[in-house]
Length: 420
Image (cartoon, rainbow, N blue to C red; front, side, top):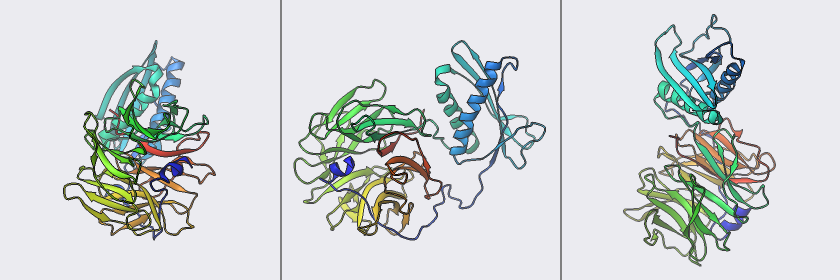
């Protein structure tokens, strides 16, 4: 794989196997999700057939979003005279289209006979952006019912070689709206979203050296960010977006650096080791960095405490790679294997190194885990369907699903922040 060819200069793949432990996503293991009754969405004017079709299409997207959110037990209500039993919420909507604009009235009410709306909103959107409107509605419903941000407006960036070259692509969180972002006709990989979702850092060989570029997602223009001789690979942005972790080799062993995104100041060296330190990721408070290092032999997950410069080793496996710090701060996801002949799997380790949880179990090679912004899901690349594709699973390893059947090999996913 291209990723391994590149990181062979650093480190390559991942590490281990242990008894699976279920991870409670909401903090209350076994707590049932509230029921949400979903009647058919209606046309504002029942006599207009096109509006009825619009309402049906909108409902299908919103329904899928609410189902994928894992926040509700979604039940279809086919007949208003036979309400869904046991539901907590009831969501209704009326839609219409006038010229190139779509209008929607949405109401969320208590399902147990509640007539007053808990949430009610009027939306108006260009008809061409119907999916974006549906995602926004779903996120607003999640927020109104649970107080939590929804992720229906998030996206996943990844590298794919469909064109014969490895380019950076992006898709909606549900695998729809797949779009190519780069046309470097070379090797481009390891995308990293900025916290505001407006920029994407990635590495490209288009000028011969693995340089680090910054893509403006609003204009589509890329700007060279780091072009030192040797590796220039993005790690992760700081939570405020002001700094970017990087792996730089400067012609020798890879080490960790951090650089201000806005300024022209030189990169700050964080580690100085004769071996290979790579793939850094910030903790949510930006005081620590998780990374991979072979300083103790085979590549393992380590933590650097930035103020004290203290480095702590977390794992003792055959191989570790691609750590990703959870948005909630308790866990670090990574790819790894227990024994040399094992396939790569996705694991979690807590920040003390005391708990290790295996999430995949040899269903192909599973690598490059990336957290959803709410910390409830993990995107990862997997060859379980014979070629490398992007999959998503719950953070406890359950319910894996293929994101999109994109031709070619897809690797190194990264999840965008919550849409605004």
